[in-house]
Image (cartoon, rainbow, N blue to C red):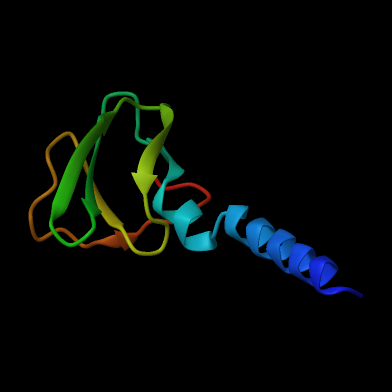
Amino acid sequence: MTRVQVTAIAAISLLGAATMPSAAANAAGASVPFGCDAPKSATCFFKLFIGPRSTRIVQLLPGMKVSIPGLTVGQDHYCISLNKMPLPTCPRIAINATYNH
């Protein structure tokens, strides 16, 4: 092989590796499924703990299922309460990639 061929192969492999998305990039921008399995007379309130200092409140009616973007699976947490906002001291559950309810 000549020097030109070796350089071309190295450039192609470096560019190919740079264009592949990393697992961390995929996890940070993941859309995560949430749903409310409450009885018909109740409403689910989710408090999402995103990163070290950010929170978000999501309210779902019974039977609703949504995908919430911008969550990190395994790092971010949530707590849930029926018919009222979750307390600040609520037990936190790690967000998973399959179904959070």
